[in-house]
Length: 66
Image (cartoon, rainbow, N blue to C red; front, side):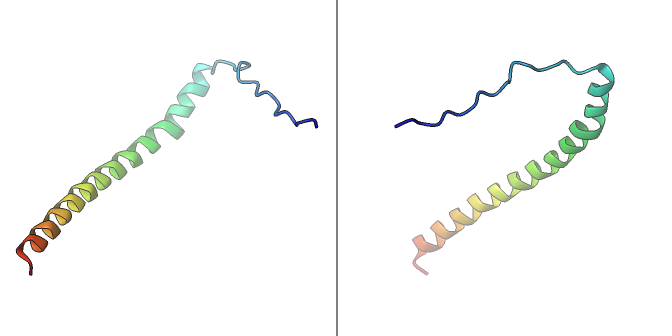
C-alpha cells in the first residue's frame, strides 16, 4: 500500500522587504493593530480581575451558608 506524501513548503525562499514596503506595513498593519490590541488586553485584564473577585465572593457566600 502506498501512502500519499505532503508536499514540502518552500519557506526558505523568502525575500527581504524594501524600506518602502516596511514603512507601509508599519503604518497600515502594525500600528493600528497594536492600538486595538492594547484596548483588548486592558479589557481582558479587568474582566479577569472581576472574575477572580466574583469567585472569591461566591466562596465567601458559600462559607457563610446563606
